[in-house]
Structures are given as structure tokens and as C-alpha cells.
Amino acid sequence: MRKIIIGVMGPGERAREDHVRNAFELGRLIAQEGWVTLTGGRNAGVMEAASLGAKEAGGLTLGILPTRDRNLISVAVDIPIITDMGSARNNINALTSDLIIACGLGTGTASEVALALKANTPVILLTENEEGKRFFKALKPKLVFIAKEPSEAIQMAKEILSP
Image (cartoon, rainbow, N blue to C red; front, top):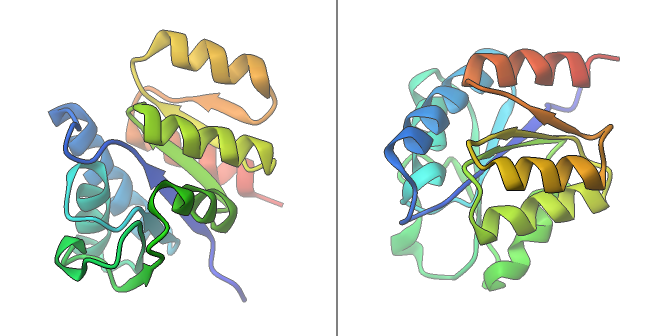
């Protein structure tokens, strides 16, 4: 039976401390559900934190890397996918994930959310960005969910993904 893949998207170097804390907890909770954690794979910000959280809980991590620079791969990524596609790799993130949780909302994350919605992939926004929440909710109201904390996001994911 195929494993569920949850994409955790968010800022890299510009990630705020609360985004990093939330991403770590998301990774941990995703692993506890037996799901695969997919990130952008780099050793920075939300990507690194989600992968580290998943590994701490014994989970499997998948990283979709924008460059071929192997020095940028998080030590917590089990399966690095080297794309050398830059931001175009965001489409792979969006299409491979069964559901995306956006932890913070910068331009790269916004592109991943938009691509996921275009592909009819559900998105949970875990962000304080009110304008971003309104914008994405207006685009696809039935596919965009708002969470205030990681545990709420995981509960929503379970409900969304249940048959």
C-alpha cells in the first residue's frame, strides 16, 4: 500500500523562529502518523526543521532539491531528489504531495501553494499572514484550510485524507 506523502513548505534562510518550531513539530507528528515528510530538502529553515522533526520520530523524509549542490542537503533527508531545476522544482513538490502544509508564507511557498491548488491538492495554511490566507481561501475555498498550530493541522490532514 502506498504511503501518504505530506509536503511541508516554508521559508529557508528567512524562516522565523516560530515557523521553524512549527515545522519541527509538523515533521514529528507526520512521522508518528506513518506518513512520509516531503520538503524542499535543503539544510535551512522550515525544510531542515520538518526533516529533523520527522527523523526524531523515526519517519521517512524526502527532499526535492533545487540545485545539484549536495552540500545544501539536510542531514535529515533520507531520499534526496536532485532536480537542478531551481524554483521549477516547486511543481514536483506540489504534485508529489497528497496534501501540503504551508508553514509560513513567502514567495516560494506561495508558488507551491498555488501549484498545489491548481492540481487540486489540499493545502493547510499554518501562517499568521492574513492577506495570504484570504487570497488562497478565495481561490479554492474547498481545498484551503487554516490551522493555528501543528497538532490542529495534522488533525485536519487526517480528516481531509480519510476515505
